[in-house]
Image 1 (spheres, rainbow, N blue to C red):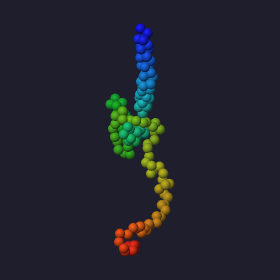
Image 2 (cartoon, rainbow, N blue to C red):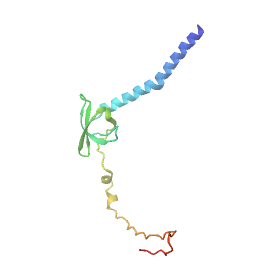
Image 3 (tube, rainbow, N blue to C red):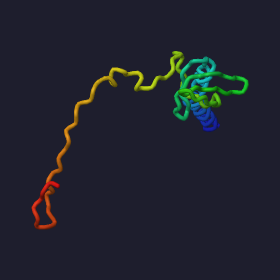
Length: 130
């Protein structure tokens, strides 16, 4: 009788541990994701699960789709394909356009390399540049 009660207590403790270690954090993460998706609006920059960066053009919550503007190309995705939302409203700019001063700098001239003499000759002739 005493061993069956201890077995039941152990099972209850195991299920309690499983709930707090696995189920509760997963529900919390799902709730945070749903809050992020509900807060999306036109003009937010996003990243999809495939790594595509773009700006939200339109959202249709009834059909669960979002239209993304990726540098002039409009793509339609399911809302489940959105991984990250940046609510700053700024589009992702190309790296080259973000640093115009780097393009204005002239490059240093590169000296032309002369061929080096081979260390081992297959024949008895001396090496000459040619």
